[in-house]
Image (cartoon, rainbow, N blue to C red; front, side, top):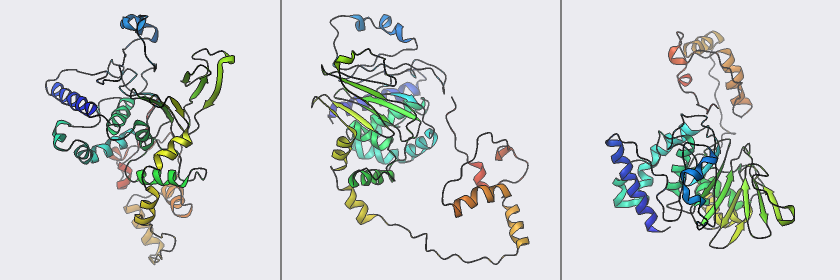
Length: 361
């Protein structure tokens, strides 16, 4: 990764910090020597009227990413309009609150590792006032300063690797290794990303946001969420495909080729001895053979303790029993009508004060 991109990143972060201190609204659509981002709070058909260079016949580019969407989770604004600096995002990140908290918790070490003595120039990795799309873009952009963007995308949005026997052992080891370092940014979501040299697309492990592509005989590739966004004569089609859950597609302009999911991930997973690291350093606890002692409590005492700690019959039979006997996460339906713990007049279990947020659209 060229040092100039790091210097531009540092300059932008400092300007963003000072603008915040001065209570100024400042946003860089792009600050890169390889890409230009055109965006606005407008309809797709208005973009060429606002940026007249896009209508100039002399204007040329080897690639183009176009994306528009309604503001579903946040109030619309110019800075939140798509595309972002590095990616376009279809869907939502339902784990965004937890992802932001964990990124904040580890950002000091990450910034120190990447920037060394210049670490004081970066005050935060993600802009927490941004939309979920913008926050994912912040994370991908930062990680791409230390690694290739396709590898960074694999860390953020992993495939369902744990039970996928079709994967190479090295690929599973890669995902397992990084699962201890980075939590999945779960959707449903599909992203496209670009750094000027590479153009990629990735669906999350849920696979609920479609991604389809067409490769033409005259060396064009068209990727979109629906077929027919760009008209391609059937006689000019060399290949058609779609991205399955967790799959990755990459166009490398330096190598002038399209790299498919298995080849790409196999090469990335083979760069370092992830499997050896896992085999030699991971410690597994044998929960199956742990001997538990019966408390010998009377039913009356047990019931009193359960009431004291605000456990209900529903929680015991529907959730705790499922965890202990079924060995799986309990699943409940939406429409939870109980008052939130902090407003409930009855005593509540400590755990009831913590609830997962979801992106409502």
